[in-house]
Image (cartoon, helix red, strand yellow):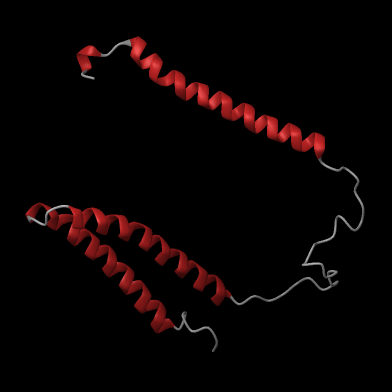
Length: 134
């Protein structure tokens, strides 16, 4: 579609499907909330309000000390997992195209990205974050 063949009717047709999908989605969500409200049990008891821990009755002492190292380890895992999400599609597309001089910019941009991540993992390793027990 070129700019001189633009018409209001064509624009309206394209957005009608989007609006209709939004209305159907809103109705489905509302229907699920209404069904949940009507079908759920409403009898509250002391036992229902307690914390469920795998069938074991909870102890009165609920506070526990969790080492921050576990959180840092999890965050590092997420960072490198996201790296893989960016790296695999880039590698597939990069290798499908014929390697020529036009592909050097994306290649060096990805090498910079990997360099920053390599620096981060080396820094974390030197700080001892990756050691599970000290």
